[in-house]
Image (cartoon, rainbow, N blue to C red; front, side, top):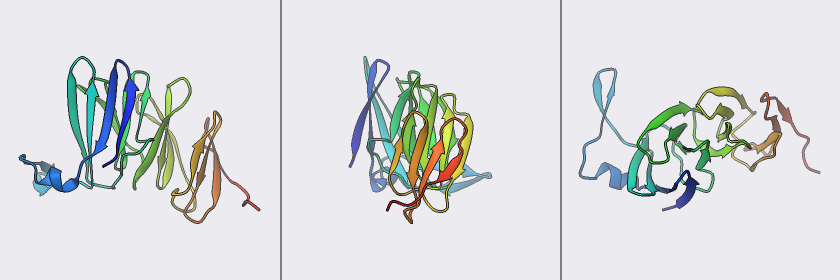
Length: 187
């Protein structure tokens, strides 16, 4: 299982994948109510988030829509809050994990990475189908999509995001407005 650690406020916060089988078979009952009906909850993604500061606190975050795995871009610290991607959502927590400040669906498929922009006032979410710019308060500033899934290389500069789709088409996305430009192929 993958595990990363992010320094956020006074805490070192670790995120690690938890085996779906262990979550479903744990000594607990998970119930989700959908339109008044109880449905069986079978998460595709299970992430254990642990804050190690003056006290240790853990939070299990489950997503049942799109799967994701923990890697170096699964969380970012912005304005003294932890923002993590789980499934198709970004979730913002206080560094002590006591409060969920907001959650936002950023892609209809999986979120692949989250990045705090300089100044920690805005975030970029690299989704499978969309690139999303969020305020640190969780408001969507813009979203943009390419011709196919953004499953290739992804990078950021201070002014643009660069993404590559499944077919190798490269895109430059201007960070202020989300304008997308298809880049010429490498020769």
